[in-house]
Image 1 (cartoon, helix red, strand yellow):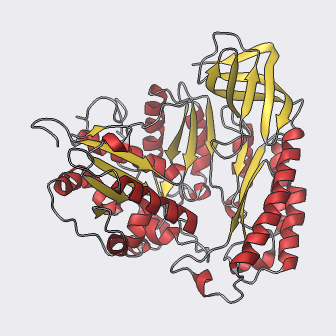
Image 2: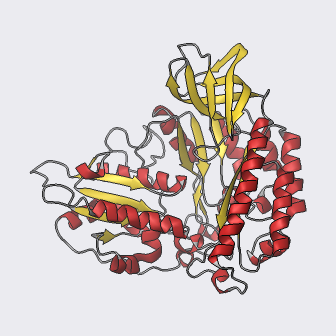
Image 3: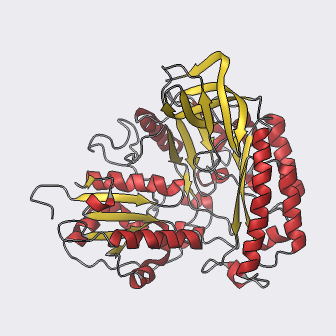
Length: 489
């Protein structure tokens, strides 16, 4: 038990996407500001907070398993409470609490501003009454421009703090983002916005993340400066839909203005944008990403399928021809650009002809990284009620088929880069060798680049000019370029 005057200890476990990682760092800052002490290992914490993911069935299971593992740590004098937060907790609320009594509390997004008080109450033995889930889109006006300046619900990752905070939380001046780093690598996600106004028939995210709300550019830039001060050299801009940034504050092209400003922040070596909607990826944004120094020529495009018929059932726009046209436009601006995307197979009503259309598109698209996901019903979505559902075995067979094709195609795409000169962000060092990521490789999911023949003064966070000499699957093997190139803060 915590002694008199000793801060209670808390461990944060963050699951799911990079947006959740930002939310966890806000929670960490709030907890430290509220008198808690962060520890790395759940077994050594009095409270374990699991930031759950509620996106797809596999992620939900992982979240529940993590909560159960944390509950197994509870013992006298050790871990006393396990608390669920995040998307699964927000989405299911009292239903999750009832079905998972091993968790001592289920907290929603509206509990985040008072998270320290909530945990203290739980540690004191008080019973927390979980929220009844509601569609968070109903909390804001329908028209995006009517959202600016009004009362807003709690938006994880958007919080601004008061000036009297402990060291290590928020920028030293200006609008103070409430954040405390939980990692130490040279890359960090930076949230542009929360929520989504699209109505994709398979996706439940807007219902529990709410309508689209942009962060103010000044807040994003100040947080970027703070991240640089904590060792970050690459900023990964995240949201549910980055191409919508600015539409609710009067400028749908605000991202084109913000990107050069972020790249100009002293100490930033690379800015990377994620979560681009193809239907909203305008020529000006393509050009800005391709030509702005310090912005990675990297396009994370959410295609989801290539068959026009399937895409319409998904409540999405486009087809193989339009998507290939967009890729041609991107490569005309930046021939060596990196492109990744995700696709859903086995969607209700998807035919073998639709699958073949997707296969043909993938062959032509020459994507650097591809995620293949089998369709599964999501509670409350339109697709759940569509006719033409496939059985699980058929979906798995289609996933296996597409995955095998993608492995061949992305391996070949990597091999096509042999002979290219790439700028590699160094993320780890071992003597005169290093591992990092080239401009065409996003963090964690797109492969990496191995570097050799490095001088001893190279440091983590440097960007090294290198020549690709070989590949291993989707990973690149490179040696330092001649003449030697290095960029450092």
